[in-house]
Length: 285
Image (cartoon, rainbow, N blue to C red; front, side):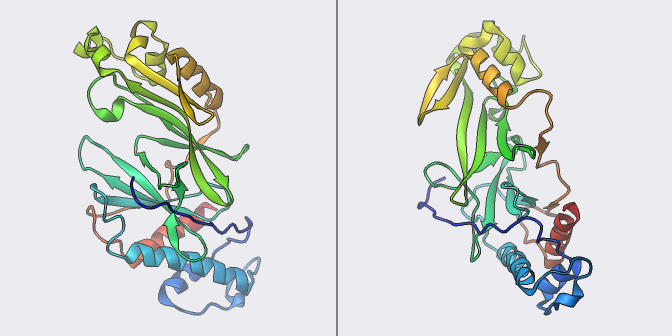
């Protein structure tokens, strides 16, 4: 994505203070003042109440604006709340979709203490978007987040003909998306193989990577010391499986109930739906 470099300093607040009562969320939307004694069980200080109100109200105002991501070609289909840095403050995923076989992608936002800003930046400081075919894998034991997009086609729908592995890391309280691996198809080589006629099909990326007969059709690279280095498909698979074993305890953050799909694409979300979305977030804690 183009645009000016974005600098942000996300406010990190210690985990454990965000036991937000649904009464608080309702009051945030209505503007009602909440007193500390209205929060039952583990009373929350006035300062923490104001923090919770602030990020909720900031997201609410942002979602109620009519021009979110107006520069994007694909319409908005829904919104997700995700936690990329394990601080229990949600990042906002905006879900765009073509409405057809082209699929869609996510863009991400967060509250930095003052404004809603892009949440995840690439190494050039530009906002990141990821395919909706990407798994956002959270390892809660090691506190790591990986983005895994796997190829499943050699020719055909572009969604299926590329893959990548990235890691989301925090630097000075800003989230960055760091490249690890990328995979693409050499279309000229692919069209010369019998795979172009659909004679051979595989169910997974690992099957393609493991087949030496089609290795020449795959462009596989590893990001090392600021440069892309060509590696073999077998090496790609080994590195991927070292970081993301086939049998693992990672959680795909997109497999969550904390989302809100719009009744019709690109319509404005209602305040009632926003309250419902944050009620789901509160219930996940």
